[in-house]
Image (cartoon, helix red, strand yellow):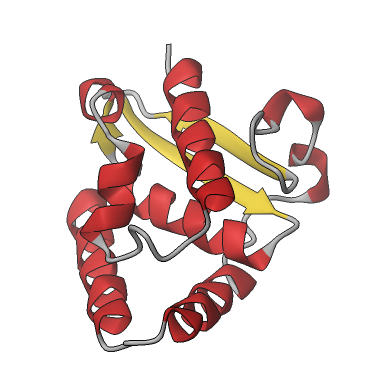
Length: 139
């Protein structure tokens, strides 16, 4: 099965779950739950070369590409909320092309799953920084 299709199915499930909550605090609790299981880097990968600049929490991203030029990322953070957001980013971009990633809009990603206006501007700005860091590392 294509990794992009599998990831899209996971994103749909996350979006459906977020849509069940009327209270933003419940959404944050769910995002934290996602983040608790989304720690994907070992301690050697949590270094200055992989850090995401512009994120208030400590956060890291490791980018790799396959022979056919599709990209995958692994992420981690010292914050469960940020780990959850980075997991959503990974589902959005893993198995995608450079062109797709170059054209991704961070705010649109958050809106597509129902988090627009539900997370703080600081978290939104950190997510935008993560997307910009990713774009800068796929060249």
